[in-house]
Length: 320
Image 1 (spheres, rainbow, N blue to C red):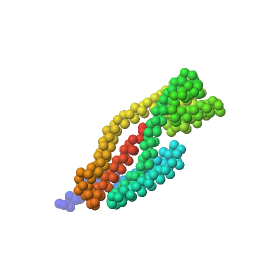
Image 2: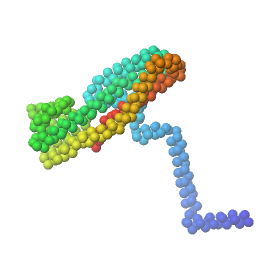
Image 3: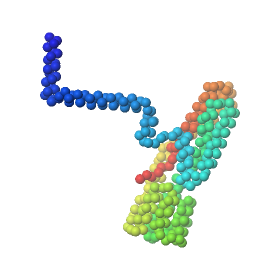
């Protein structure tokens, strides 16, 4: 009976394959494709397990991610280079070296070798952090000054159809460094070269601002077609939009930033308070291995928080 069942199964299978027009060659080819697909999937998973996710991202994007220490110094270097102050990078390196020496002195004074690495990193990054903070404030001030300057000059230009006259009428209300750029533009076009388009092109390179560059491009087009003046006001309005977004962002970031500052100050003040009120606990914190490790961990957390807060405080930039 079992032989009959087996023979019936074979005949039924052959009949189905015949009806579906599946020959042994087709079946073998399909089986080979399935085998190769399974093998490739297995090799991909096996290969992916060997490479960390971070490394896979670097391979896909083609950009190698650097650690936050190198990133901070690279950011400071780029900022100084853009502002034509690359020579000041030596001062940043000197300040970092002084910070490392100070960390060694503090660690030796506390007799805590564990605190030396994070403290050295934190004090060494202070100059780079200072450059980034000043750059953020500088960009905000530049955007405010550019908004005022372009609004006034655009209004005058809409009335006079003369950019040189429009700049002349508003030079006395502009503030540095915007006033310096427009003063240079006015003097060159009034006394040296009357080619307004050339002057606007030079003026365009005065600031790393997408909106300002767009305004300059539109102003160049207006020199050949006065009907394009209507495009100037919407461009200037973008500064107002950025200021509004920046204000909303500052408001949303203010609460967590204030909380972080309060917690950091409280955490650091607890150490001298503990020394005066609980000398026994302070001795444990400064004389035992566990206490020294806790102090080192505290420094690590503070450095990480400061670095994150500085990165999040970057001003909003308009991108096309």
